[in-house]
Length: 299
Image (cartoon, rainbow, N blue to C red):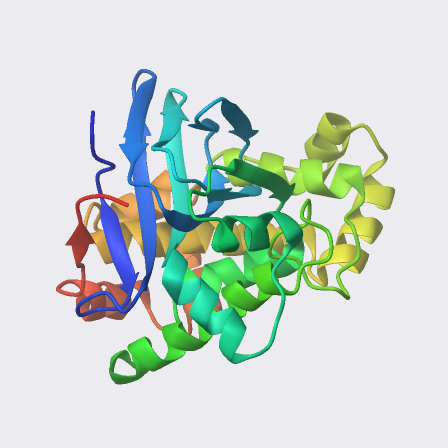
């Protein structure tokens, strides 16, 4: 397997301008190794599935819910574990990033700066870090942009700059793509959120979730709302609806199939929840996105 299927180029929609933002969703029934081109900065936002990143003699494991930063003069390999995978990649040409930083008088993190200034950079994978609530909310917007189609390139251009600034101004390379005002999640809250992302199609109850993460239901409910600003029910509903929206957008499911596959037994409840989260009925959403897919063959 030399390609990642179902790659949707988010930005730019026309020819590359030195940076490319792409969304991937696929399944591996067995382990696969994918080789990527080198000499570019690669930021991976891993939403689902586990994989390894290797280049030269360096290797990092990138777990679900984490980001990874890669800069290398050697070929980069992704070692995919069996299972479902979702990830977003931001690829930036080396000269593009250097010009971006130089024009603003900004300094990159030490390791990235070394990669930019060396004539034959060979740093390989640099770091990984967990994706926080702030990160996940921004990533959901990348997949489902809240702007008109005519404004997409301009909107994504700003998002690419935001990602670059997160790298350029990061003072701790173990916290890629994190806000400086972001609080670290309670470990149990992270575990609860990860469990819901993995088991969203099942009947998830507060009591079962609390038992899974090892705390009382009242503590989990209170702490989850404090950290995320959302109730557990709201968070689970949004996961299900965003998953269903992806099915409809890609054309793999009709409305009824999408509803049942994300855990709804009532089509009416699904339609109400979908309209509440997305601001549009599932039927209209599917019609709007039926012809909007644009796929790219590789990273």
